[in-house]
Length: 212
Image (cartoon, rainbow, N blue to C red; front, side, top):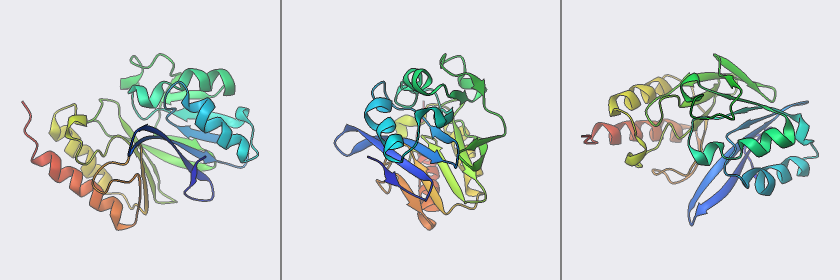
């Protein structure tokens, strides 16, 4: 139902088309569950809630949901999540107007499960796109902020996108989880040097991108 990435982090994948998935990340704490993005309208019931129950947990333990940005494949499950779990939905202030289901603006840090994540504003794909960084665990959740060869996902000035990625290069990352299996390397979970290589490749692709 989902891939166990660490003892407390799971990735739930929903196939959008052959070879391409959209992911929801769950962080299981002792008493609370944090969620990153909510997928489509059917994602919670068909993919996420079964995993929570499979782990012997309750839906009302979902305490907070972070939307990494406004796109439909990341927020359409918000309503179902709120109705079934009562969780609070947080998003960057620049995305609030575009996502009426969001409840609060993200601050400098957010707790998911028992992990504390630093909220890093990474505009480029969307004005209010964010990444989440667990410094203690050296874990980076990037949403769509590192999009590799998907040049069409750089929806702002490429230099804004490049500057955002350069911020990520300053982090010590041992595990990076993306929302889609971006190429290179065509997978969504990167470990060790793979993370830096993906960020560097995304920068190089953007540098060579011609924008009108």
